[in-house]
View 1 (cartoon, rainbow, N blue to C red):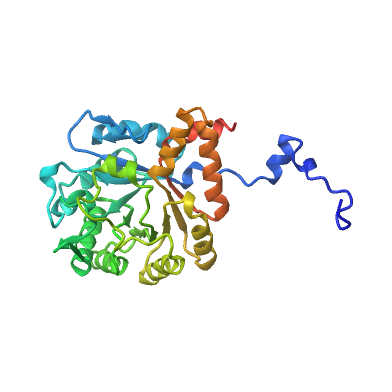
View 2: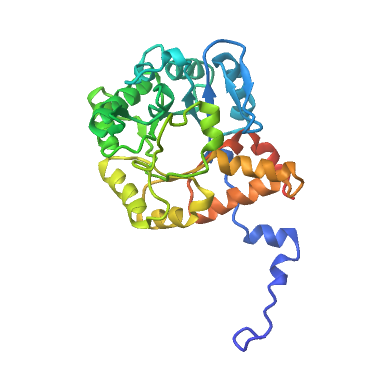
Length: 330
């Protein structure tokens, strides 16, 4: 043994479950989780997402059924993604801010049935445009300033329907300030604004894009999403969004970016969310399917990694399976 620690045996801390529990940080409470959900038109629809086992595209009536056990278990909130039919898509994403939009209708019905459930909405244009990009596309280029005007309309329409919080994901410069100004102008001063503040141009979104039919028709999103090889700009994105009026910051994806979560947590006093994205979720399912690991033990370990790094709010597809994750520890 080293001279400074003549008789220290760390095994003493690990020998019993009681001692381990004293020293371990607790697993995050269900109230800290947000479950992303996909809404489609029609009724009696619960469509399995092949790339994301355990997740579905729901019509609103089926989503209400799916929410019952999740709400009962104590999950804090949901984030709604609308998946419109192709005839509802347009170059200016008009259906995204329609009073009769999928998200708007879903908010109203969910609030009737689960008034205490916190509803966030994703604010973007990719699922509502035929080209699949996150903003107004002109001559194969995103018009940033026109795009933020539309994003502000979308966010305000969600707030008007009853959303507790809006979460812009388009990564347009100035979108947080534009949305905050429009929310305040329309008397939605108390609506939470959670920014996808450091969102990377990642390869981990594939299953989501399959679920939401939101892959770009051509090109990619590297021109407006953050580069995972450029640390300073990635951190600056969150600083700028904080300055523009974001209430909550976010890192997306999560597991490959624990260093970013830690750095932002150390530099900001705002709450920090981590989006545990579809690729991170599905790769654990794929590993378990090959009998290379225990599914819920891996899920638990991955969530604890986010917890250690400083995550306050967990946006995760595991949220509807927390009962299994919490009870099955090995």
